[in-house]
Length: 145
Ligand SMILES: [Zn+2]
Ligand SMILES: [Zn+2]
Image (cartoon, rainbow, N blue to C red):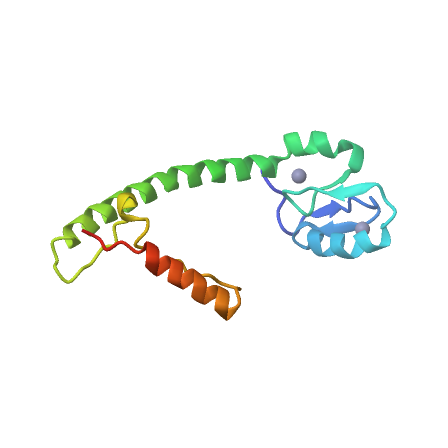
């Protein structure tokens, strides 16, 4: 038997005298939590209906059944991730084909061509400083071969 059926009565983790239908337990816990603010109980990060004494939380987090569900989902997501990578590889092959299309221009940075031909814009300087910097840039300007 896995989870209790939705109509099955379960006892409230804050007060065993509270018998709540399992399907409504998280509503009840939300209400009941406010009346037990001073309780040393904390909510399980994997399931809001798991209320655990804070000293037991570490142990609960290690053994929580919901944690294993999340772990297996994570595992499935990892597997799903691999085909995504393959799709990206397929796209890059497509873009190589596009290079034959003469209407497509692709910017290819060429580190060797960077240098004096680039006139740097000086930002935040006064107009005269900007002008001086521009003139220096023009003085150092060397046309590309
Ligand atoms: Zn309660
Ligand atoms: Zn839990």
